[in-house]
Length: 301
Image (cartoon, rainbow, N blue to C red; front, side):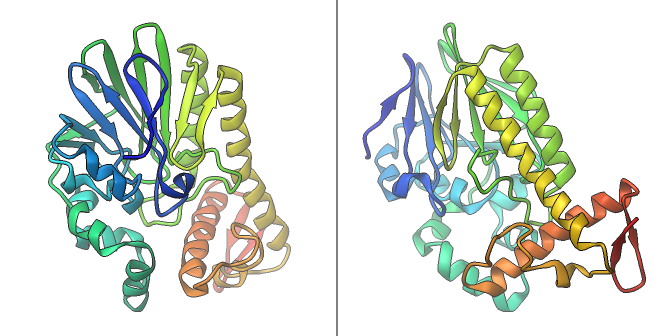
């Protein structure tokens, strides 16, 4: 297994392959009276933990976070709203909302067959907001942070006097929040980020681990990173409002630099994800009274 970075007496950072970039993720290992791995997508080397874990906690159901669930022979916990998608491939596909002709391409490109074979496993524990797991001197508290998925959760971890948070896919990358699946919600995402800022401040959190960025040190650095991340949502909304000076459809807004500066390849898949994210913004803007829904499209008020 790749080298572990010790963060406290019982907590270790597990950097994912390719520095945790998708389709991998960074994970967190707790080695106490009970051992726990948070997320399982660090790569094939993580199989070295087989038979050495008591518990797996998944931040959410996406493939880069559940990849090795069934390989590690441990009890699995995930938020009750995400459990079905982490257990059953058909529900996983449904929530992505991809047209049937793109599903196989998506799986071929980003879901290694080995991972698919071991990812979908029965959840032994369906947790909720505020639930706690006592591992010895270390405790893990669930923070339900919906938006990236319905059940996306962060984890506040305490080891003696040391406090840290595992952010999952509130990942503080420069790309910003991603909400391209059917169970994503852009308004809930923003609320979750605001809630995290308060928790980090109130709990005097010293360190954070992001699924795709790594380790962030210092309370002020974490709070600043969260606020910058939140600003990405507002920037996208502002861009949509600019474009709605004339009537637009969700299709006509795709490819205009709202989410992706330039649509990556394969463009059909990323076009679908951007359209989904734009539609979530449009729904929110209509609800706020900033945008009118017309027969064929949308326009700002």
